[in-house]
Picture 1 (cartoon, each protein chain N blue to C red):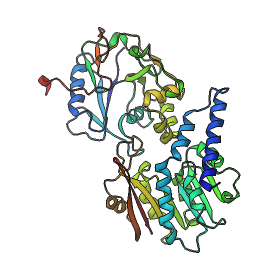
Picture 2: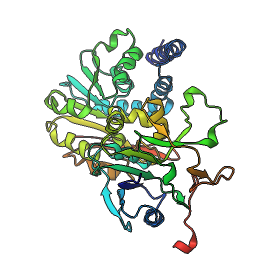
Picture 3: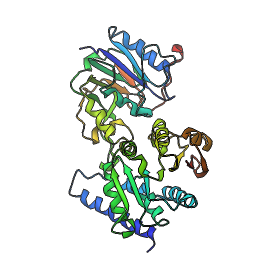
Picture 4: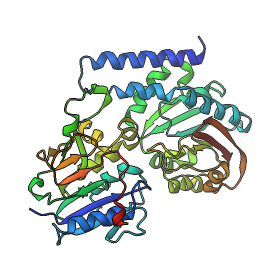
Length: 202
Length: 215
């Protein structure tokens, strides 16, 4: 099963249009028919279709990812999202599924102690699949008390888990977290690390 | 006990109650206790006391209703109450429904706060439907609000209604969507007809708090 839309979110200056364009180049090999979209407040240099960040609410950093679930987000069909610090090395299709909201299980945290009030989680939203229009409750719930959620949770992963929003996880093997022991996987992810593009790309 | 000691005593009891309830109820939100602590920390207290002390000389004898947009747990209103007549009504408006519950707990049974009201509503919706009611609008959390909405408040208020707004340059906080690089930039963004007072307070190395009083 292939995605209808491949969505990126670029906000702030941590990642550039080059990160977006490079991911598009990598993924186009496997998904030539997909529509490539970038939700951003700064479209300069982005070579795919741009979706301007909503005028309201103004959000910063990763919280903008939640706007993808809004009923006003202009996509239809099966969606596939990637964070911009990903390096696609092989076809990820065998691991992908569209079954509600599906996100990564972060295998590298399996043995980590997490106190309940730390609100840490064993999932990671660097790769997400969903069907447009079927997850609008996530955005609506976020809007119901967004300032409190942004104080309480350090990111959207914690928000999703601890607010009891339903999700599934991909089978292990989709990603290799480069900060941890190497695993053969179609995608390298630089979770939380500064991800510099290879020089030969620039 | 001083009024501050009573507020802190009520806060300790509130935090204790949250912990005790959490032992038997999995749905209790332990973060709420940390949020209550943060709302009363030294920075919050200083910023709000600064507002009260600075504002006092500007208050008129006709003052009857004050609205505080985004009061959090109502600390500002409690500090202000120490300096103003008990008959003046203070309306704390917050969209977070639990601000009302915990704001009342911090006020406790102190009769001084009988006219400090907590309202759960979108601050803007609430204000716009009764904008004529207030002689003073306080907003110490402009950094959390859309710039367009803040300008609308200023534009919609009666011309004699005073505002006292605070913001800051604390850009790195993820929920701060409307910070400013300087006091003048903040004041300019409000498009006030009259600026009665403006000033800033260094909070820490990363943050300067700005305040403006005007019409």
